[in-house]
View 1 (cartoon, rainbow, N blue to C red):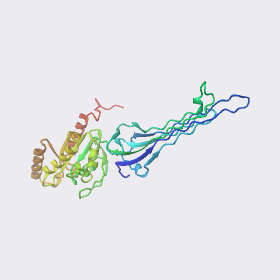
View 2 (view 1 turned 45 degrees about the vertical axis):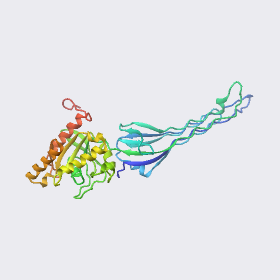
View 3 (view 1 turned 30 degrees about the vertical axis):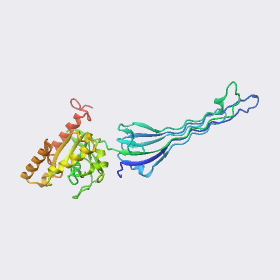
View 4 (view 1 turned 60 degrees about the vertical axis):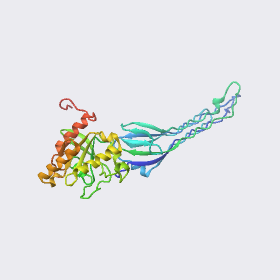
Length: 341
């Protein structure tokens, strides 16, 4: 399935049906009077967040969603049938934006959360509604209220407990494949990953969702490459795992590049809990590992974990730290005592 995190759609709610102008004409009823029914209500357009989806690809092939109009009223006091609603199903984490791509109309983060995007028009009144003591035979009825037509944008921000960050070719995809059931594309050249990947990570009997965010570059917060598009997915993560390529000669500069882009994009990202790890240490000598680890600790002012996604070195320790950080945010419930059926 192809990944798509931005889609433009056109919606229109149904117009209300017109009221009916009708009079009773029955045998043996001398003064029949008006009996025109009301028009039916037009269908509305809703958007609903559902589980089991992680892409907006369906909205690449269908971009128009028009609800049905309400039926006109009929004689014998019959109200027209209301138009059926249209429900657009989207993944969790989808934002609904106005046509300007800036105004957020809704943010759907809970399963079953539903938002009304365009309300259907009311049906018009039939002539029976206009009957009064001074107007016994009204010959007028109201038209239905037209529907609402608008253009909106759907923007998906993946919901994950932990997010992988790093420069291109930092080993993020290899790490995700080593610790989860995800199978991202892995190769020995930069920008192998072009779309975010999700994987379920298990450690000590608990599980959490990890997202592999494609490699960021300098200037990503200003739109270079696909930076702003990828950084949007990081906003949903509870904790970030920052991987630095241990084979690089400039590990401190590589670390600072990513931190600068995070802080420039959003204060929220800059304040998120981060775990820093020196990756690909299987390709380094012991003295090189210590030298580059010390450089990273000096640049970050915190602890640096030494790991290798390819060789599986140091992975359980990092995963336990990530789990502890996720639990500290309240994203995962911690059970008291052993599990019982």
